[in-house]
Amino acid sequence: MIELNKKKSLYSLRFEDLKKVVEEYGEKGFRAKQIVDDLYKCKNQGLDDFRLLPNKLILKLKLDYTVFDFELVKRLVSADKKTFKYLFLTSDNKYLETVLMKHDYGNTVCVSSQVGCRMGCNFCASTVNGLERNLLAYEIIEQIAYIQYLEKIRVSNIVMMGMGEPLDNFDEVLDFIKRVSSEDEFNISIRKITVSTCGIAPKIRELADKNLQINLALSLHNPFNHKRREIMPVGARYSVQEVMASIDYYVQKTGRRVSIEYTMIDGENDGIEEAKELTSLLKGKLVHVNLIALNAIEGSEKKKSSDKNIKFFKNYLSKRGINVTLRKSLGQDIDAACGQLRASNI
Ligand code: SAH
Image 1 (tube, rainbow, N blue to C red):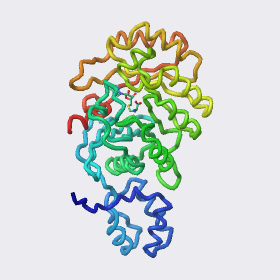
Image 2 (cartoon, helix red, strand yellow):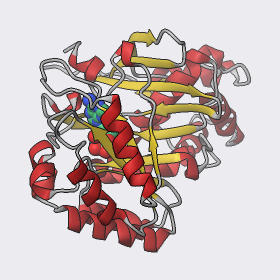
Image 3 (cartoon, helix red, strand yellow):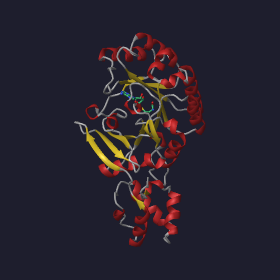
Image 4 (tube, rainbow, N blue to C red):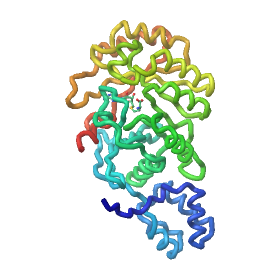
């Protein structure tokens, strides 16, 4: 098959690369700074919008580059206009989805790190068709840039809780974190970036050794190995104890508090036994539990826990000194849980 020679996105260039490109075109290096200011400060879609650049530079750039190489396929807005969901098509025709949540404290973008996922959690729509491919660092950046451009807003927080397992795409995700927090590019505070993992213990340790001041979230969902394995196949490779030991190591290395994500599924993980076991597992650790009611996915019989059970579970933990909050489920009217929009489009 003949591949169309598609133009590359300007976001695929790091600041240093951009400087080189500009110099190769016979222009001064400071032009790269002007391009970067436009790319990351939500002004542009087309190259013609780079008003400070000389025309001849724009013409040269246009021959080789485009600003965005994604196509926006769908944009959904929740009834309260606080949650926005986007379906993008990549340059090689893969669907990926991204979510924007407007909070009082700022704008959070939930990015995808892979197209699909191979972790197989049986309550998650992202994994239904397995992994198609890893996203490149710039494709994670482009999700944020595209949303800034579309909504004319500044993004302040990033959560890697969209499609994919970030630690299964380790190098690109690290590169993404480096670039997105760099003063030369997005300049988003590293403390406002959250990486969420299903619990690949050795990768959590590797991440700890990088000593980044990011937030780490662990998707636990059940404290019992035999039950966790049933809903999360990764639990068969790394036991709850192994994962928690890697979390201890992470806390010790970085001094950062870790979030424990706990999706509440009716009759599966919302009973007193789990509450008890979870309490003894987490007691005395520098962690915070986020309870999330399951967002039911199509074709699955799993339901979210009842309000009564959620309340009981939360109170049980908090009375025993565990930090716990119930996370508000946003955007249910627009398929906002991981992979749901893509699943209903492929
Ligand atoms: N692979 C990473 C990040 C993606 S999922 C991880 O596992 O952490 C982000 C969070 O949403 C995870 O805690 C995941 O378990 C949860 N999640 C996935 N599908 C969900 C659903 N249908 N309802 C509620 N939470 C879900």
